[in-house]
Length: 502
Image 1: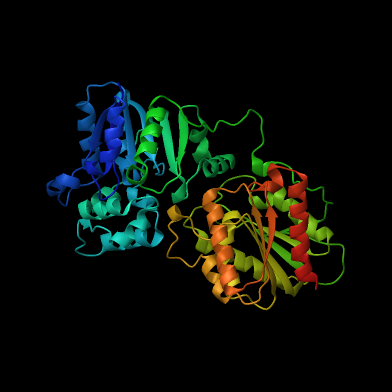
Image 2: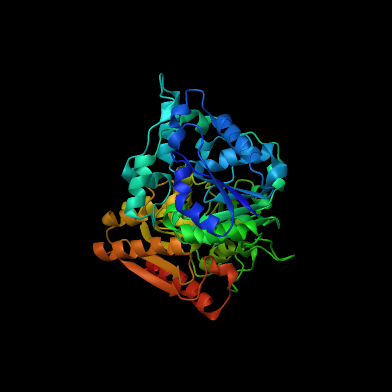
């Protein structure tokens, strides 16, 4: 028999697992929904000294009292921190750790670092440093649960119950660093990703494919993944589906990311077009591909997406897709510009936008560039950086292009209160031409942002040219060279250059 220990996130307790626990028990499993000190019906037991170590000890005690040897321990949201801490103390009792729509905290990281909403995280930090700060964090208002994760799929009565039964969370539990010896890195692990909260296997695969050392463990055979098409609270929105996934995880099932031996990552495969080589000049974080034409020429600045972890090599301007596009526009008479910016984490959009703005000014100051004829082309999550340019386009900006873009922050990115919202920027875009390349086989959470953008564009009567790639994938320039994708690359370059050359 498998014993499940279920550990909920901030403000909640064992009660949040009620429906899920019933379904697991019906399958014959033993189930222990944990309520940590200070939460649920144990809220009266907390005090100023209640911290992460308190919650780790809660779980260690629970593990010690479970007779079944095969223990699957699942942590949701904040709950993954005490789960990992307890598993580190009792590794011989743990058959599998389940990360339920949550990150992978490392030794020395506090739970506060994984709070998705940036402004909420800053607020909690400020409150904690203020003199006389309460040792508890107050319960979110009903409309604020979304800041902790997407509430998609939660029935109204369940959302009301979530608010009614929530307890103030001990502040020390979020601020105390997690301490790990490394033993949990060897335990079987499953990640359950909730797509309506912005997580997906495709996103994890793309991240792992970049070669970041932090993602090495994700491709090990002991690690599996599942997706649920729901928001951040699947125990409330999809208990049947979650029960099925947990039972499969306990049996060792799930998707594995292990790459084929010797296969190049998708972003390092050849560019889909055969384009002539052009001279490349490297200036700081910029590469300029120069045309044969004399005199100042128009320029296209290509802006990569991300996040791309710091230290990844090669950097985006040396990826085949950006080299290919830079050469292509240079062969057509424009200066192709690629750059590396500092979007290394979801908290880095501000400085990445600053990098792009500085790069554009440097390009316009180059005597080989016509400063009054510049286009900006954004890819993937770089689409969010297009916001300022769309909202207040300068007269020299002849066109903005976006390819398989993210055009509104995904729910778990913590950017809801920031300015990086191209959808909203359309209100003041005026007559700026926008070329949007969309792929038919896009991740659902990204496709939804593109649809929001097109709906807003229709509302505001904006000038959008859509290049459809019905069978295309995200990053199609190096993933699938077909007649359709080659035509899309040709058409998008032609359209951008038409706006520059007129």
